[in-house]
Amino acid sequence: MQTVAASTSFSRVALARPQAVRTVAVRAVVCRAQQQNIAAKAAAAAVSLPALLAAHPALALVDNRLNGDGTGRILGINDPSLFWVIAGVFTLIWAIYYRSTRDVDGGDNDEDFGLKL
Image 1 (cartoon, one colour):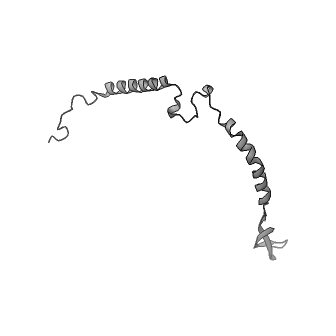
Image 2 (spheres, rainbow, N blue to C red):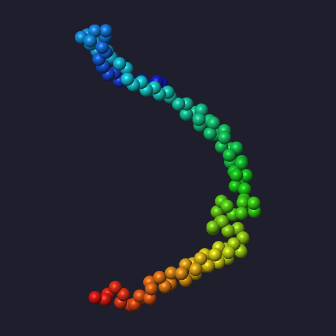
Image 3 (cartoon, rainbow, N blue to C red):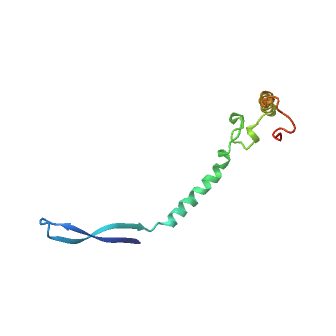
């Protein structure tokens, strides 16, 4: 099946003499489409599906070499001691931040701060 869409436009073409102007139809757009063979695509997909299903367990290999990356474990923690390391580092950084910003207001921490006239 071939579909052809064509649009013609008219342009003026000047010949050797400037007084003689002739209008000529110019073909502007040609679009062609071909029918796709869907049955061949479906047959190729049906042939490759059993191979994919047979190889699926090999694609999901998870062992200690991956270190928890992409294994679906929370934060990639594959060793219980890693949780305590992450929690300790977070707590240390939070404590340093809290300690450094505790007195930022310069002692103006009144209950009615901002309400004085």
